[in-house]
Length: 564
Image (tube, rainbow, N blue to C red; front, side, top):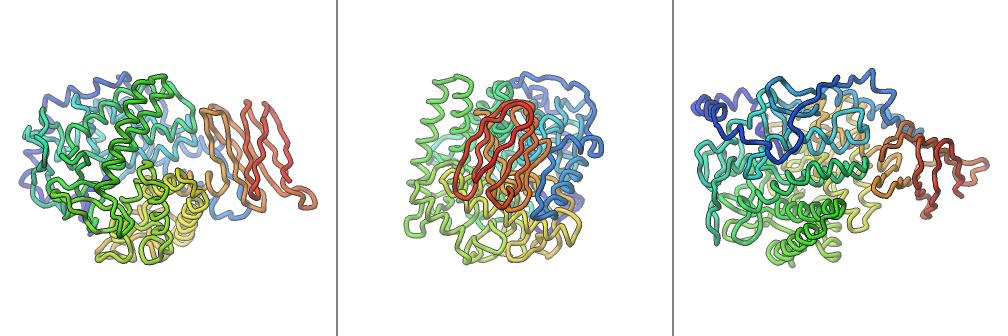
């Protein structure tokens, strides 16, 4: 997802040499394309209000500060993740046309849509102290009139990455084909539908899978900022419709290529217009997210429309992509045959609520199966019994990635598998911590069968100091599943699942405009736990402890509760 370096660690320099014959022409096309000036018409925020980019040393005392006496290594890892994240906060370059400060993965000189969307998920816990969800503004302001948004935009110029621009004004095609490293330009073939008009502004390689609405709702869950949802409504709807226009195949499912999972063993079977279980499910997710946002904004008819579209696509996915014999979801070839390669893509059906409870149970069995996805470090991106699986990672042939684990975890929670979701989150967090203890840093991805950084198919190590989306584990997972705090700003509620038998909590915790300090510790004579809450506003606190739930009304100031 998001990368155009190969699994064998081709550097950007090597790629440019490989593609030298077309580089100058492509740059010229991208720089002088008059259509670039038409971007951003659906986004109301048009300019950048200059502000100081936050510095770690100056902001640290205001950040949420976890208390976790049970494991101080996790606290140390948490602060390392923030230290690395602060290195990647930026303000817009002059003449870029960007309108907000942003966090960048620091992979190269471009910003990446998927990376940014997932990075917002941990940055939001420190809202508004650091650039977070507003980082996505710089993609909305670059949206084409067709609704398309390029997954990769040049940081200095604000132009779409040159190779992803359809300067040829052709029907949809992939510039680099379906197999990575780069191959030849290949057209998309639409089966049982005509090619859409007008032609797309971007290539298939440019069109990342649609998770912007999910990221917006993840942020809203913590901030409760409904004004933000109103701001992004039209860009999101236009983006959704662009996918329907250009990537919907004649069978009603959605086309994908190598750009979703660079070197996945499934990719060759998707050649020229095969449909992906991940992107098809993500379109269900997108529609359900839009319906939820519409409800929050009082747009009842829109909510009905998007719910209907989600339900219709769900039926189609279950009819065509679910294999009753294998009890698993598969991608489809252009001709509609199932691609019998088990990858993590199937689990998007949980996040999108595509799977029935029975189907979800089968997917859960796979997550717990040591022969497929239930490895030492879950969840590998490719089943362990697939040809080409790499026990050391191999990029998208087995590696553990924070974004896909987050998708699995949130999906499990949709179906009530909260304990398994927490177990996967904490296993990931502990591996990241153990590797950090030895290496001193955080990595792009991790091995599935050992507590090691991920390695590519040529055995080289993946990128280090990667925060980056790898910050999700040390920050978001730690607060939600280690400390146990999960907010619901719309309801002004904070649920605290207390599992630690030692002192646990967080100072300067932020949600729904509140700043709260919470500490739980064993009561005298081990008679339950004592909880102190110092808050600058009122909210409802739900305590989950030893299988029981207690609800307390927190008032402004100091509060003290005892849970048996």
